[in-house]
Each structure stands twice: as C-alpha cells, then as structure tokens.
Length: 341
Image 1 (cartoon, rainbow, N blue to C red):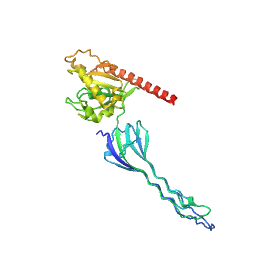
Image 2: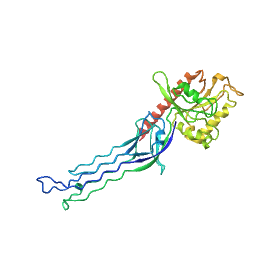
Image 3: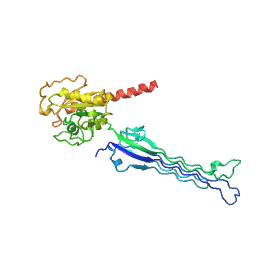
Image 4: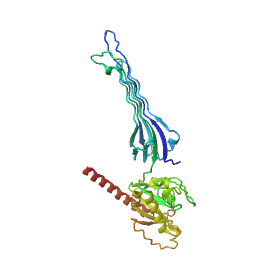
C-alpha cells in the first residue's frame, strides 16, 4: 500500500538533573561540593533510507520519543546522555511543523538527516556554583525538557522522468515494459490508483527512474479524478513524457489538455522539458487526424508499442541523453552560483 502523507509526534529526551552532593573521603575533612552534571537528552532525527518507498509505517505508529539523560551523581560524575532516536523515512520526504506549517527540512537522498526535536540540556550540579564566598553550595539545576513537535510528513517521489496521460493512455504498460515495476494493468479507466516508480536499466550500467501517476482528466488541478492528489509526485522530475494513444480521436486536444492541467497545477512544472509518446502503435494510426502530428513545444516525439516493444529502445536512449544533458546543466549552474558567492 502506497502512503504519501502522515502525521507523527516526536519528543526530544529530557536532560538529566544536576546532583547536590558533597565530597566525603577519609582523611579529607573539608571535601566540598562534588555534584555532577546531568546528561543531555537524546534528539529525534529524520533519516532517509532508499529501501523505503512509502510512509505506511507511520500510520501504525505515531509517537517517537528519544531517550532522556541520566541524573548526575556524587564524585563529580556526569549523567549519561540519552541516545538519539533515528526515524527512517523514504527519500523525497518533506518535514513540516503541523502547527505552524513551517518546513523544517527535506531528505532527498539516502543518508540525508534532519534533526526535528532536540534533546534538553542537562542540569548543572552543585560543583558549578562553588565560589569564594559559598564553598559548600547546595544549589543544583533540573534538566531541561526536550522539544516536542507534531510533524506532517509528505512524500514526493524522486524520478528523472514523469509519465503523464489520461486514463488508459498506456502509462502502466509502458512502465512495466521498460522496468521491473509491476503496476496493475487493465482495460478500464483509473487502473492506477497510486503512483508507481520504476528503475530503467540500460547498457553500460546506465539507469534512470521513471514515475507513473494516476490518469489526469480535465479539472485535475481542481481535485477532479485522482490527478490532484498525485501530481506532486512529478514535481521533482527533470523530464515529462506526455502519453497519447494512437487510437485517440483528437490527440492534439488531449495534448493541450494535459499541458493545461500541468500549468494550472504548477507553472514551474509546465516549463520542464517534455516529449510526446504516441502509445499503442500496434493498434494502427490515429482516427480522424494525420499520423504526422506536429507538437512544436516538445523536444521529441516518439511512437511505440509497449506490448510488442516497438520503438522502446530509441525512446529510452533519447530520454537518457536528455536527462544527462539536464544533469550537466544543473551542475554548471551550481558551479556558477558558487563562484558568484
């Protein structure tokens, strides 16, 4: 089951209290203060792990508490600090404060970490309060409480290519043909009820990720159909592929509809490079419109059959080259920003 939203409660560990102790040793008539400090409370840290692809676990467990610090003790012994608690999530997760809606951070790749609830500071023991005028202090400090937060977790899939199309456009069939993903395929609309992610493996150890989202219909950006709920899963893609079946009556109308829904959802997303994929080549040609359709805003037009694997290889090679071109452009842009800084 794919779950892309969750609400959890996190609690940083409380710090241990300082100790009020006096040194008592044989042969030392005036021992003085010897109370140790309390240990620091553990923090709650969100950590990304590529082995996870959903937030389902957080629907079963909502409360996460780090260890508290131990109290200080005599002979100036500092209490043991509490262990940090790592909460594992899928890469692509955005973390928000549920009350203020402030974005606390996001974890984009495996190993990324965001501290969301710091542990409390340990209290000072009476040793810290000794002075020339007060050589036997009895003052000590309690440990500070850890931070408590209610968090909203939102998962956005991270993929190089996003497949966009109306219901029954052949998105799931294509994803199954080019990767090891096994999305549900059937002959009725809205077969795909949740996003699917597949890894395409090419020769020479090349690979890229492809995301397939539920079919988009007119008004998807306003909540019609399933598009609005899942459109965010293509926000992080570098390239969009608009799928239009060759047995469509009005392919250009479908193309403009998909473009319009993407633009209404996100103007920035609509400016991403995109190609057009004419699917179901095995069923024939377009009804009522010429087969040599022109899509001037697209950087390429492909015609393929996922069932017979016709046209698949040139499509994948072209996608690979385009994504690498964009990766290099992003790297050069980062270098320019660094030198300007």
